[in-house]
Amino acid sequence: MPDPQPHHADLLCAIDAEPEMRAIVRRIAELAHTDRLPALVDLVRADGELDAETRRWILRIAGNEPFLRDAEEHLSPNEPSLQSRLAGAISSVG
Image 1 (cartoon, helix red, strand yellow):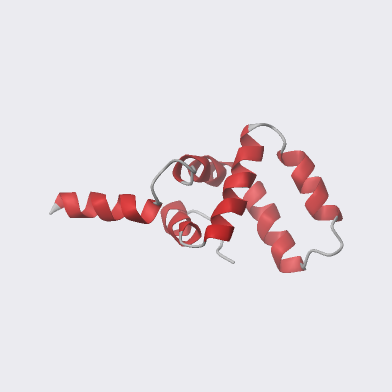
Image 2 (cartoon, one colour; image 1 turned 180 degrees about the horizontal axis):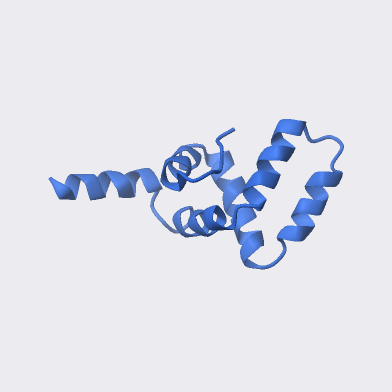
């Protein structure tokens, strides 16, 4: 799974390309925005059926507030994909 660290734009592009991952990250960001993230963290930690890699990935994203703010802004369901916005911006420069 992608690493939610400083290169938010690169990571958001990778997430944006995967509809399931986009939905998961967007939902985590929404929970953070509405102060319901601690409940998700508790559920993830207590879920015995969740594999260790997925658990670590979710908890790492849940603990990265700057990334979650970027994700909420850039992965909005009403926004065009980040890749198409970046492509449009690049083409307008030349």
